[in-house]
Length: 116
Image 1 (tube, one colour):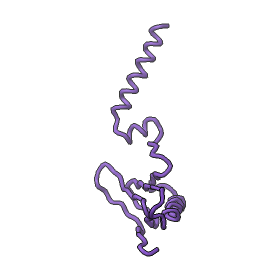
Image 2 (cartoon, one colour):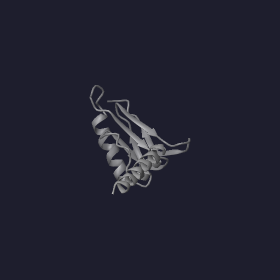
Image 3 (cartoon, helix red, strand yellow):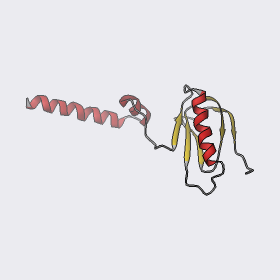
């Protein structure tokens, strides 16, 4: 009985060490989840429905458009690919493209409205 428990512990320990040694994206794939950056960080992928991405972007812009001294802080993280969405940028809103190497990120439109 003791050897069974210790072999299970050993396997769990080894699996933990292997997963800890993986780069972040492979680790997330291995355990089946993505990182949790909090409710104000939105990660978009090209395979997501265009309407869903646009709706989230528009919702944040509606809040941040005139919020020069507001408390809201948001980040849009886009994985590599083509996005057929308009990305208006309000106050305290970051737009980030991420990849291991520099690749092309294409947007239909990204703009900042300077008039209030």
